[in-house]
Length: 355
Image 1 (tube, rainbow, N blue to C red):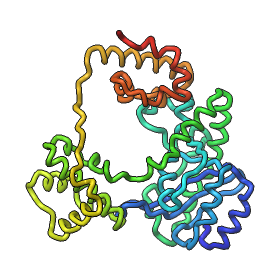
Image 2 (tube, rainbow, N blue to C red):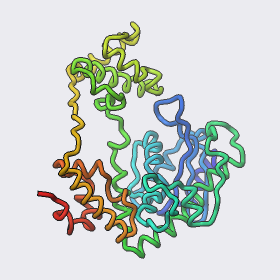
Image 3 (tube, rainbow, N blue to C red):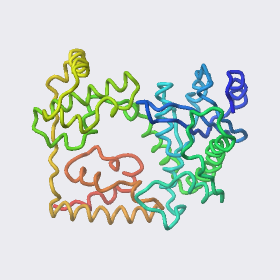
Image 4 (cartoon, rainbow, N blue to C red):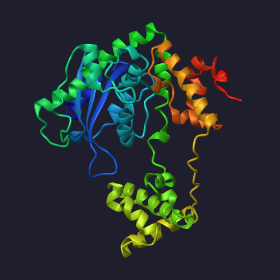
């Protein structure tokens, strides 16, 4: 366990020439708005280490390494790790190899019992590729505890030790099937700051049924949600500790009201952000599928199934029914109109149209 600046400096010296690093994080996310990062695990071809974030005063030397132009991040379900580290570093990696996504590009690796609508776990993928059954005893560990049990540290190290081995095998398979650039393209889609910065103007989307209210009530609800999000960020507290979703609805409909203290805070917020005074929520009606749309989706589903079998892909990695419906109704920003998806579908796209 690396817990001093000197140990960190020594470790960074050992990996100074490495450009591919397996990365994982352990964090606690219960009573805060932002996740509390506790451990960063890193593995190269020759060494694995746990970095005790809670004991470190300066992580900048580590960030200098992780965010170099030539560094490839190897992670499983990389978005979580990118997000947790982004909140501390305010930086994004330059390139990412996500082993979870890689498995969807190599469907024959997945067990026949695997639910096609779910993502494969790190434990299952490691058992498939390495024949190793990883312990699950520490999946619910409180990573803020010090000292951590030896078993917990080993569990954390295993998350990057086998990740590096998984990467090497998956990379070879992807190269053999000429899909490595597909995987790297998928990784680039994770490197958008919009994925990790919360837009308070869209905070109302977290409250179910808010769009069912009349416009005036929707506006009040949107104001409450934006204020709640802003306050939660400022205080680093869970948004529900500021105001629950049920409270948002009952206050917006006039059934209850904010406390005097919270009402004053809301008014100060609206003075600071006057754009929320007359914010309007555009409600999209849930228009039922027409018979023609159903037939088009069926044609598309058949094509996607054929392409998935032809290219050894899971169907969900290509697209899904929600995206298909958006396209059928005129959305030209859907994912399969660019990149590798378009390359495998472009010859048949026109055949899926019903005049």
